[in-house]
Image (cartoon, rainbow, N blue to C red; front, side, top):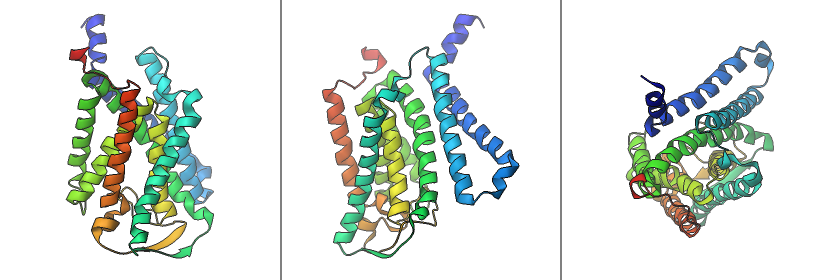
Length: 286
């Protein structure tokens, strides 16, 4: 195999996705393994130890992503531009936080949400740790690599459809899955976070949206979250009512209001993206 053929093979978009995910995910696993080898971390409180590991793994994923694509694609990594960090991180964080607040507010207005106890602020730490990993590592892999590279080839619309269907299929076999939970998850993970990236062309927005979403639901509001098993939260809450509003065992993010609010927010992001000419056409139309 000559050099030109090898270069073409390595830059074929599907192979590039596989290699890039393997490299970034590999850096995370390697970081985790190295930290756990350090004898001193055994004396730390579990919450602090897990936070240190989460920060280290998030930084490893971030640095590896930047170095990898500087080499692989020979370009500046504008989707992680430091000059746009504050604006996009702020929009992302408050979008995720406000959405979760709205989900719980609907339940509260229907007499289904009651706070029985307020814990110390330190109880937010486990949720913060899990959300940090989900925000940084997952979004770099999903939006930064898989979505971005597919979109460059297939265009924005087709890639959005693929991601919506992909998350629907993946979550259809989850424990306690319902039609509503599958639709809600697809609207959030497949559409909302992807449309946030299309709107901003910056990964900080979906990273911090995902972080705030996973931090607020279990950590602040004490609601079930199917993605983690946090046993500490700021608010100890009792959630009652029809599964349509509460999301049942899967939490408020799988409720009817979650589906509607995610669809509305996604449409706003996509409408703004269209106005900014941020949609990419498929390669055969370029």
